Length: 90
Image (cartoon, rainbow, N blue to C red):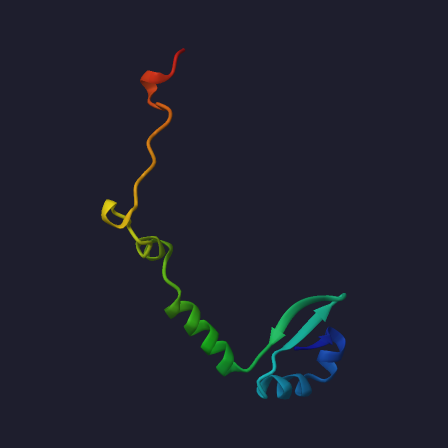
């Protein structure tokens, strides 16, 4: 990714845009730190659609976790301590 200082990017904005249109995002820095990226609109749309459509919700992700059973060798370990309120002495 090509990096431009803000002043240079302003002075050569057409070159920044043309480079982004060729498929290479252009980074713009201010005071030496990256602040924005210029990219082609089609790439921006692709990224937005991918974010909205391909990413499952957290709940969907949790529901895809395999649920073990005793038949496939999955067992919860025995509780080693009693954490109920009855077991706590005051």
